[in-house]
Image (cartoon, rainbow, N blue to C red; front, side, top):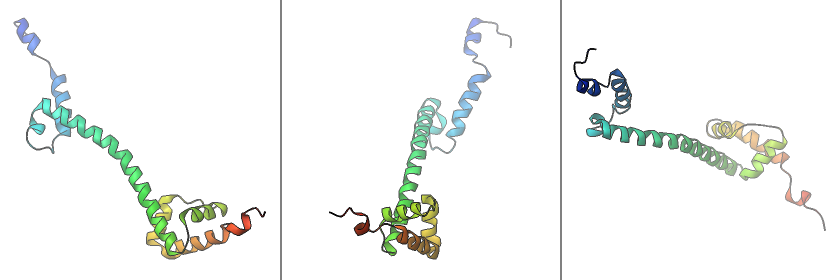
Length: 134
């Protein structure tokens, strides 16, 4: 590029600005109105959306963990057990299944979950036997 005056040199920001803005506009392509078209508003909207997305990833993990625990708890109640006793019974029998798998078994494989509950019940210590006698 040949610039005849200093003013034109200052005004020309080059291709870097185009690509930088294009990246932001691509992230805002599904927005409506000025947050889609006006760069100064778009950048604020995109930054806010990215912040929410970051928080949302952590919240999704937390929500799924709570859902799995709730499903396992419901399955335990069907078989007359407490959740903590169920978990400790599985641990004593060295059945190391995570919450996700146990929740899937409780929902989709009730007979398998029932078998696990029975195994856990046999291994769970009785309150009368383990308490110290005085």
